[in-house]
Length: 219
Image: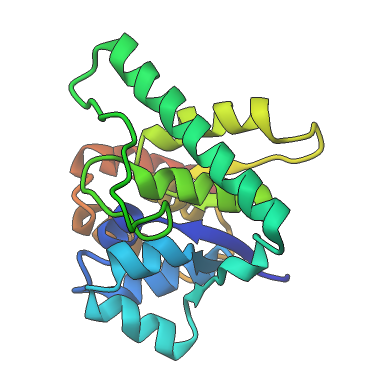
């Protein structure tokens, strides 16, 4: 089976690797599901670059750092990408404001001398917008994320960018663990998978994982 490229975000990476303490779990989970992790250059340079365990996985060739030239091929693509970036960000900001949720983000106001490719400010979900646009521009099938904003951004991008033929799936860490529990030929043992559930601090889901495993393996 050929591996599917899956875009990975910072929260997903840190949760499944236990903040880098156990990168082998991240590797084993993604390998078992035939996912090849790829990271947006913005995420790699502005968010994950500070983590030595991330850089090690890039050097090993396990994680691929994408280049902007892969999805922004010319000036037209660049203009389109930047236009969509501002539109998606503003729709997300308005959505969060209307929903009156705890998380609120300010209007996008990029300082002089900076661009959407260089500007970094915590809590503004700029990386999420970049990830969604990369997925849609490259027609990649999977995003691995722990961020709830991604689902909303996908719905906006589907309306603004995508044709009917493109389908984007978004999975979080527990989604992948349950997929493995449903696999008959998984490389995990039941005990190993239960340990992963505890390591990613999802003890409340342990019973669900056990039941899924037992059903698949006729226990």
